[in-house]
Structure formats: C-alpha cells, structure tokens
Amino acid sequence: MNTHDRRPVFLSLHQIRLPVNGLVSILHRISGMVMFFSLPVLLCMASCSLKSAPHFSKVVASISQPSGWGLVFYAILLAWVYHGLAGVRHLIMDLGWGESLSASRAMSFMVLWIFAVVAWALGSWLW
Amino acid sequence: MVRNILALTGSGVRDWLIQRVTALLILAYVITLVTYVVQHAPLTYAAWHQFFACHVVKIVTTLILLSVVWHAWIGMWTVFTDYIKPRMLRRVLTVSVIIYLFYNLVWGLDLVWSI
Image (tube, chains in turn purple, orange):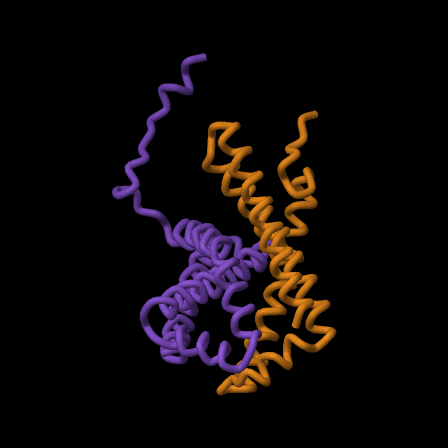
C-alpha cells in the first residue's frame, strides 16, 4: 500500500525546464484566467464607450497611452490574442493533425512567434 | 455513479464539445469585430455605436455572451479540478465562478439590449 508514497517527487519549479509544448499549454490556462477576470473591465469599457460621443473619446484616450488603463487594456488584448492562438493549436490537434512530437513543437513555436508579432503590432497600433 | 454537479453539463464529452463549439463562435465574433474596427479606422463613436445598434448584432452578441459564460465555466472547472485539491474549497470556488459569470452575463445582456 505504501509503495506509491516512495515515488520520487521533483517539483522545484525554478529548476524544471518546461518543454515548449508545456509552456504554450500553461500560458493558455493563465491567459484564460486573465480573460475570466477581464470580463467586468471589458463590459465597463464597452458600456462607457457606447454611452455618448464624449464618453467614447474619453475611453479611447485612456486606452491609447502606455500607462494606467492603457496598460490594462493592452494586457487584456494580449491574453485574448494568446488564448485564441493557443486555442487554435488545440483545435488543430483535436482534428488529429500535428500530433507527433516534432510537429507539435513546431506548432508551439509558431504560436509564440505569431503572438510576438501580433503583440508588437497591437502595441504600435494602440500607442 | 457520482456525477459532478458543478460541471456545466455533468458529461465530459458534452463539456468537451461545448468548449470547442463556443471557442469557434467566439473566435468568429472577435474576427468580425476586429475586421469592422479595422475597416472603420480611425474608429468614430458613430461607427462603433452603429455596429452594436444593429438588431442582428444584438442577437449574435447575446449568443456570444452565453458562449463566453459556458466556455469560461468549463475552463475554470477544469483548472480547479486540476489544481485545487480540498473538495470544499473547490466547490466554493466553482460556485463563486458560476455566480460571477452569471452576473457578467446579465450585465452584458442589459448593455446589449439597452443600446
């Protein structure tokens, strides 16, 4: 009965070198959590921006600077973009494509590269 | 058989499918919204308001709000099941998630249909 207690445990998080697939996967979960908490912020922004033209301008002004709500909005956008990209990777694998180790690693790197490009593009568009 | 009453449907296969279908719906909606914003750049209040004032958009946005709630419910349930071991704590957290999501849903519906 005691045998499974003797299994080695190695959970030193700063020493574990996560494979890229694992990194893409855990970031998918973290970005999902960020999106979960972003819902009231997005609803707030949507409701304010749709109230009147001056309200709309105020929201646009507050999110088009690299500080305060601008940073919050940028972080939320990044979470949505990342979750979408990593999610598409999951859907592709659900179809049975790219399930080999080399293909799934290539797709993981692709997710990270596309995300980096979109993150840069979004930043330069917002600010 | 003990079914998990706090999961969205209580059936793993059904949850799995709903997770994928809602993901595709939300993705299509976001792409549509982004395309609209890009086409109307620089975005004005008139163009922004016009999009959400359209009756079809209101109906679709309602479906998308529901999709987000279902998708997030399944996702948070999965994450809690994986990482939160104490059963009571997990139940309290999952119930909090459901209440929070419904609060956001009602808020969203109120917003969409008051434009």
